[in-house]
Image (tube, rainbow, N blue to C red):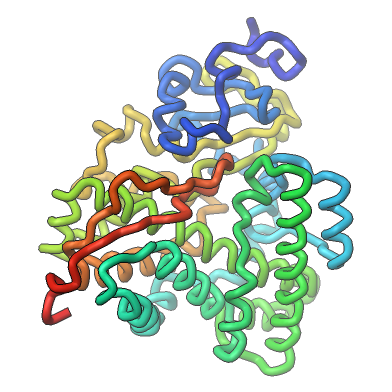
Length: 427
């Protein structure tokens, strides 16, 4: 069978027919689920998703970089189309999603990116280290003598939310109010929710949209520092490049980008490092190993398993033709385990020399603008936990509670325990 005819209703392969990104196996080990595809059918059409699925490192990387044959316009569309009730609920909030950096094409994309990127450059983000470390320390203080914690509930959910608001330029007095509006966009964009759940999520999205507009209005009146205040300056200088709708979308999407993905990435890292005690012990003994361990954890279990593109022309890859107009799923979590790039990719190796070649922050013109911030937060959290609670361990037999969605990937719970009597005296 010509695979390019699959979307026309022809029979699909067993690999394609069995691919279920909402199932338990994919949530537990997405790279393993696609191992056979990487070997024998690296590009296939999924009738479940109505997307062409791309699984090998070289193809994912090439498609990310190719802005002439692939559009990013569908990157934020819900993978499960919204029902009438959910659309009606969003309309009640005057929700008006528009293109932001992640889902816009040339020629406007690079013009906007160059004007908006400076506040998120590595040298600028590094200035936040003392404040982030102080924040992490305050949260660890709250449970260090308790002997148990859910690291997601007690640390990893709130800290990236607060940091995200800070980086977006939200005034300190509004951060506490705004952090309660944080939403889990994974199910909205990447899940398969019921109609009732869609309405519930739509209500949360609408509330955050409304609040985002209020925060932008305040920053316009009072000024500030950060990503959105910089965009407001660009708006005043070039209102066609950055209009009011773009500012509101920036505020809303900026927190999601800085929050849920960082929470998931750090939770994944801690889960697998604590499972692999030898690696955890090495990090506790030598914090200098932590930066490379961060890269390896991002490779081993990405917090964003896949991203999307739309083919603008017929594209032939690995003997398969992806027809023009097709939706394409670039599976980062599979490419990061490509045996032709990473030796023994199924192993978490904190000393891996090429760990930083992972695809977890994308590639090319749309590479994640917030990558320096995510790396900084992950490093600080690992430094503080290995220093203060080197003896903590995972609670045995726990359900990590991964949300059943195609991309946003991280445990909803990460329960740990330790004997407070063994806490280091100098920590």
